[in-house]
Image (cartoon, rainbow over all chains, first blue to last red; front, side, top):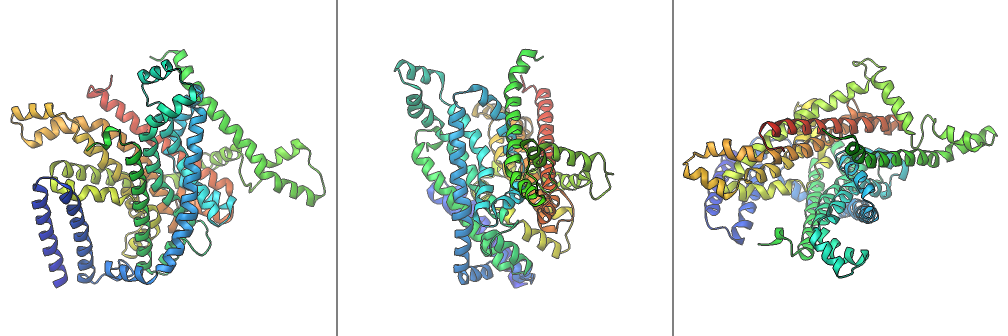
Length: 279
Length: 294
């Protein structure tokens, strides 16, 4: 009972604090502190409710239990991280996005192919591509190659569509200016159209960063060597060791956010001229 | 009305690409299935001519890559030829996936709109919830799907709802982002106009914010629907391959039934296309009635 009461009081207090903070003039400090308080509140409330209602750890372990498990099994988590993210997701991401980028440039000179590829690309981007996972696992075996293949298939079309859209982003006036300078196709491409396409390309890269991690993990459900985040999640669920599952989820969330964040940082550096980057 | 020339110039490129894809598919079916055909012929002690080889690679029982017509036949056999109540009917499996998808989509859309309304009207919510909504999507929920299913089963929630929860988690995000953008899309001038009329907040919402958010909402709904279907399919994987398109995928991969996998995959694709097209249709009608479509 005490746990629940404490949780509710804590929640109310933090909510009041957040209301006060958000009424103040927005600045860097509140922009960082308010969401942090919100996140901490949720964790505390979770901890209190788990203890208060005596929820079995088989159903929902408390955050403290997850943190302990996380700290105690760092070596396993590291092995899984390398297997799933570095070998599976990252290599597939680079291959898939690279291939999509090159394809976009290749079809760039043919409006006919573009007109055909765009609707199909949009269509395929909306399909449940994860379903390809069992087939690709069958083709490429259980190790990381098949996971990378799933990631390649998943990221290819979103990336392709975004790059093709981006290459159209420069306007007529700018292209005409390039022509008056006597710029050839490749000069115009590298000096004008690729830089103009960067916001779109980075949009694609960001979308694909989350897709890559999902693809690599889900592909492991269909067969994997005895390491990897997807493997660990599915086996530990079977053993009802939910604290380990949550530890893996924490790793996935951290990796996913960091991956996204790094790409967003690079975007900021590359497309500093774009209106959306202005403060 | 669309002229026939416009029709051709619009669809010719798409059809060309589709034709190329099907040709590549047939060619890869030959390439991928040839080793098995050769192997079989060697054991039988015969040598295959090229045409025999090709016809064999397009008609194997468990090919590495089934040819398009094999998949089409399988889909035809499991939809039209089977009774809908039969457990082998793809329509029955599709319906199970569809119902979870729609339930999750409805829940996700509702949650998304509620959150968006809160975020637009309360600064505290904007500051505290919005970053977490974005962060929530970096958690690969699909990877957590098995745990959610198992846990919800343990507390006695089984069947449709656990799958729908995963769909909901995937589909609420695009709705929140799109609706927040849409509800904020009225210009300062329009909002000022409302203020000079001393319009209450609720009327501003119903008469100005909500109507101007409609185009954004529909774009988000399309993304949300596609995501919702993916969620339902992945949510079916850990239930032990009982029912649904996801279960067909898993069972197919256990027993090496490639044709079954591909037919489930293609039906999922068709389902996704139909659902998204349906939202597109509703979008056209709604926006036309609101006078927003030229």
